[in-house]
Length: 392
Image 1 (cartoon, one colour):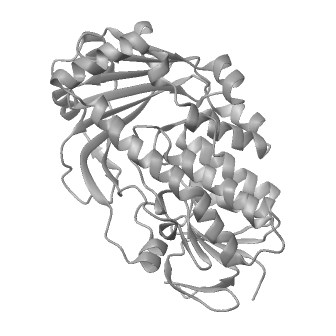
Image 2: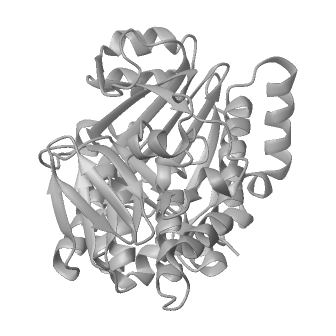
């Protein structure tokens, strides 16, 4: 059996796992379903817990070339426009947590990780390959794809996303659940917006049954906007990149304030994503069994209300790297320890993300209490030290 790691999935999690495994001294065979990598998604936020890992991997300079680093997160009432609270980022984040808070286009972080894998590792990428089956033997894992490719390695890492084939084969559990929330996503050049709508900060607008998040990407030259409302998508929920019309979103905004309405109206093109997730993890066996482990959305897909989906995948990869460095531990024990170290933190972020969504979209007395608490406590409520300090 070859001394190598098999990785299913070439997204952010899969590339992070490939880089981490290579840095731990393991050759990598990575399988990606698509025939070629393309620009997907929109922006993502990365807390200092995630940026610190990228810095540890020597990617700080590359990150600085493509990301934005907001100095503030501001929360506003979507109806009145009133500020409810703020969290200082920038230098405060560097001082308290050892790294800045970053916002970045999803395609840019993907390209950054792909370049690192291609330039600094011997990982072999197999494009257009779907995992069909795998079986575990005493000497390792044997994998077969739909196109007839056969690979073997000491371990298999399933980083193949929300609709993971590796997860289905390993756990045989149900499909992801539909949350009833829809995410409208858009990117627009700041130069195409009137001055009063441009921003270099993270702004969160909270309204009944909806919220909107905006932040800069691509060194601040572009603005990423995500509006999340309640509703159901027409079509297949696993096809997240539906075309949609701006008028649908404008109708969903209801009687929100003029500035928010102006922002939504200023953006002509939106994409629609039906949000799906899984319940928070309940045991380490949901993240690894034997020589097969799950990473990122394949293990713990979560709602985006803590902006940590990509972050937890990168943290998973960093943990995997540490354990793969151990020359004496059997592989199944390494992956068992990986799962033991990761599942509780991932479950906590999953649960907190669900709770945040309920708070963000609150109405009536709950909304009134939220706004009052944020006015009184502000930064204390918005900061998340247990998350931003990283895993113990």
